[in-house]
Length: 357
Image (cartoon, rainbow, N blue to C red):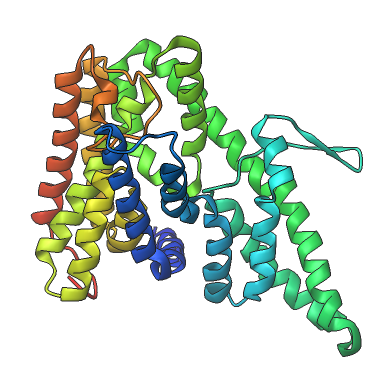
């Protein structure tokens, strides 16, 4: 048990260390996305205008190109060459490749099928890629003569790590995510309340590994085919639970710089972007993240009981609540508040240990 705990701590500290350098950027981008959503919802700015196009690029670029940025921070954390890592991240986001993958079409590489995977905004495939890059670099630098090492080492690393990522790391996450999405559909038909409790409790940890994207794709498909979706309603309470736990940490902290980070993370989470709260505040401190899972589970159960559905696609946030107008809307709003309050109270009344708390 002690060894398992140590391994969990190593993984959490590693992931947090990779995200820490960009937490403030994530908060800024999340707040900008929220402001843009408010301007669009209030009809101050048209969603089809060129002004919106430019502002949306500013708000969304960090999230779209996240694999390349994480490639750099992960390389610095693991000890790999950061520029080689960024190039590998760029391979995953190359426009021609992305276009084919987004259409759901598999690619034949030398006669071997390569599964279509959407990598933008992804986390785990690029972190695994950089982890592998460390060992491949060490091996090729040890084997190759100094005369050709300078240009041949990066070439071998990009080809080997790039192919392993496209063939193995990406599809693994997709297969797991698709399986979880199918399990959700099965449980929801048995009991929406149980499905809400389970999904609400696990969806935020799933974000860490990128498994949540399969649920997002199912939600998009539901809205396209049926005109409504229940998944988005059930993942609303965990979003607000992240904000509640981060706010409690902010109130408990005596470090001004960390409190500022917490506040920006709370605001970002309220706008539907939970990464700053999760990776910058709750996950590194561990106990608040447990509170998030409990709050998300309790709120998710209520959201499932409400029967609320999203009429159009939008990630749950303060500004997108009108998307859920209709059956069970009042109970859905209550579920988000319960998720927030449960995580807040569980965090505020427990001893949280950390350098800034």
